[in-house]
Length: 278
Image (cartoon, rainbow, N blue to C red):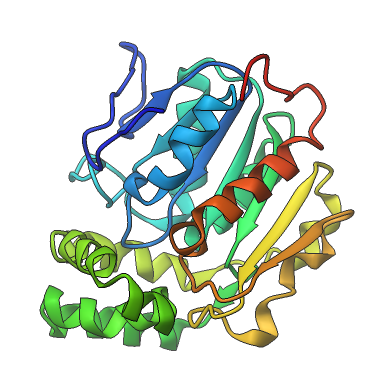
């Protein structure tokens, strides 16, 4: 099994590739992993090795304003992000892919599916509500970002991302995330957050999604209100899977279970059976 260190994954890009930094490893039916706000592609390390070993090509972008995709030449607003993802797939000559989103990544995945239904072959939507049209919440969140140090923010944010049990049992993992968060460009994150918290309500459009879809929630997700955890149930034929005991970063807290859910979804997508695997 491969062991890919955070922030040092190989990047395979052509001269015509878009500006999004990304990881592109493996061969076979492609799976694209989309991280959440304030994170980067390293969030998906628990899944990458296993999915590659199972016979998949795995693409993991750093979204604008995050990780290696920083810089003033990028449009860091949330509405631009689905377009960046689709542009990346086109540059990598990927005609169809399964998109796996976590938190904000799920919101990007669903917008990409609505914009390019011929490209998105399947969806895994983890720990996300289908809309957030609250300008007051956006303003308050940005004010917090601009008034606190990165360390203070990490201390406040950790309980929203990780379950209490995980924070107690895996303090080194939480500390690793805290160091990552402290290295973020907070102004870039603020720009993303402003758009993310006033994104459109896609619930009226979900009946038009015509690909296999899985909806995943950690039972201890403190970032998504309980009343919003069924927003995506309107996707026709969507399967609902909960991970007992997992927090918002369910793929980090329960990596094997989360990866199995991705495999379960992929098995329902025509033409996505890996040509090789274990």
